[in-house]
Image 1 (cartoon, each protein chain N blue to C red):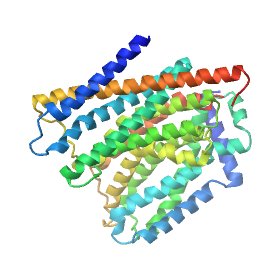
Image 2 (image 1 turned 90 degrees about the horizontal axis):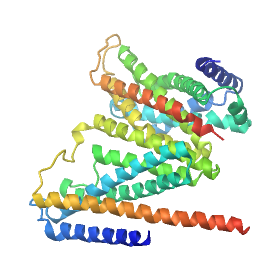
Image 3 (image 1 turned 30 degrees about the horizontal axis):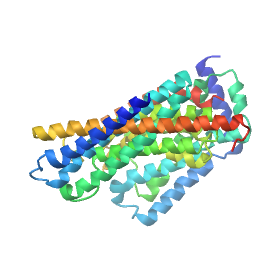
Image 4 (image 1 turned 45 degrees about the horizontal axis):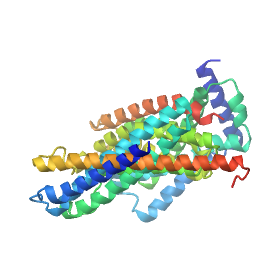
Length: 224
Length: 233
């Protein structure tokens, strides 16, 4: 188990180094946009990873309601935290890229708007957990319900925002990329997703320790 | 008892409480009036502005007022310690939910029926047949708001923040429906220049109404499925 853990750490470190090399050394500069276009290699993978994390929340929430096993609840909560984290990365790298290209930091453009609305749903999910008065089990159950509803709402958000302002669409629907750019995009997507799994794994370990500590404390009669 | 009969019993109970205490409808209607009053200071209400900002103002007033009323859905049970009685009652969670949604829908519809003339008065909106589709939009929008709102009222009731938590949960989730409500209302109000007796169907309305129907059906279904988990103790 321990050697697997070290191997995984090494893989994460390696892929991130490889991704950085690909973005800053391997890929040619974009002709029109210049250096700022390199944000793309973090921006798009972060967006994909955020939705991967939200899908994790959805699946773990369903599993929790079915099995009532604490570990599913942990996976749901940590995935939501990480989903929000990666959404923040998307929402911050977006404006940095948008300013030189679109001329403004923010446009109420369909994809940007949907990302923001999705982000607010999962922040609400985390707040629901923090401010709950229910027991541990009750909190997990209510949160699981919200985790399911939020994910089902994602396609609605996308569709309705398209309906609202289709003429505002600024994100390209498909892009022609140089072969090197395609390679770099794949490497970065894999690197960011592996990084997400790494963070998930570490947070899970941390939570398990916290749970064990709590049990030990109850055992010796010191519940603080 | 059947699902429908149970739901109607719950609805009757809530309506009776409201009839005796009048603690939901009156504050909600008054709140709509206050929101319109406040908007008046930021925007020039009346005249052509109804076509630019009317839909946004109208729906902001309705959504805020509805959140006020939705908060009472389960708070009234908590204050009277009757939530356990409802859990023990031989009714399913789904019929409890359906009854509460029906109640909230009626309150919202009443607020809209009273609020719309006030809005029309402040905006100098001429009455006419062109407003007919607005009725459908308000009907569908209220169903969506009542379904999502009732569900999250039960959820936020288990939060320390209670009243504060409800808007944080409802607004992001209901945004897709709200967008269609505002856009459709916008399309209707854009015709306010028409003569009183003329009616013209706006083609764009159809898409928004479809969106609202799909949203309402999907959310009612999911909520009915998940509501038992929310009230479980």
